[in-house]
Length: 66
Length: 259
Image (cartoon, each protein chain N blue to C red):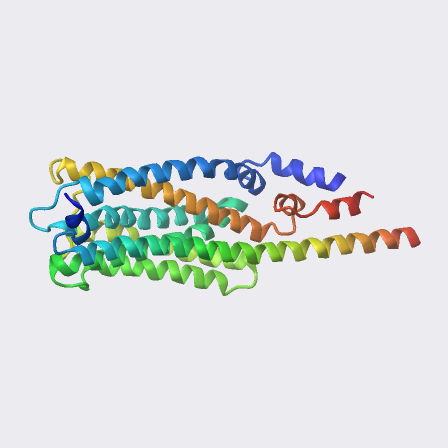
């Protein structure tokens, strides 16, 4: 095989390259979606943590005053 | 602090606990990525360059090196999902339902790849991109099962209900897997019969690169499942102190609780 054959894939270049290209694109899109979800989750966890520490402080203050 | 170590102690002693997996899996990922990329480097070199051209199909046979591995994994992922569903329902294992949910989008992606590479292969080989025969229709049903599973799971606000309803769908839908597998034997299909591991059915010069590509896609699949499962743990353990610390939060809250 030479480079010219590699790019043209006989007369099947269109089908072969679209197959490999779209496969790569699908995997990359999946990883991108995971990353977007990860960012959303980090915000959620941060809010959860702040809520918990706020509650802990309220309980502590109540104990002191009581 | 007392409650924290008590909770941590309970998790430590549970095999397959979210905490154990979350902390361990991050160390597996670099090695898995290295072996995945190495396998793809070999696999792609053979499948796109060094493997021979088919005497009838020409270069379009190179689509096989993606189509077959993703087809295998589209079914393996569903079976894994159904097994997780059974374990989750019978033994109420926490991690099992998380793994079940994590598998769905990855299975759907592999099914989608299998379908469009099949269509792109079909145009020059069969003269059509689609035929409503048993193999293609059942694989399309598989895609809808994955999408239905995700939609059903996200339609409940209560997680336990969502897990159980989706688990039932996963288990019932598993009947489709032997149908996909057997479709080329039981019905007269446009799709060719099974030949991947049959002796003499495929030239070794094509079989070897195919096996390398199957291995490469398997490792990629495992990596994707681990990444997605870690996200599922983040989602479900958002309240847990250990997780908040893992993602770089929670120090302040501990100081507050201790002081």
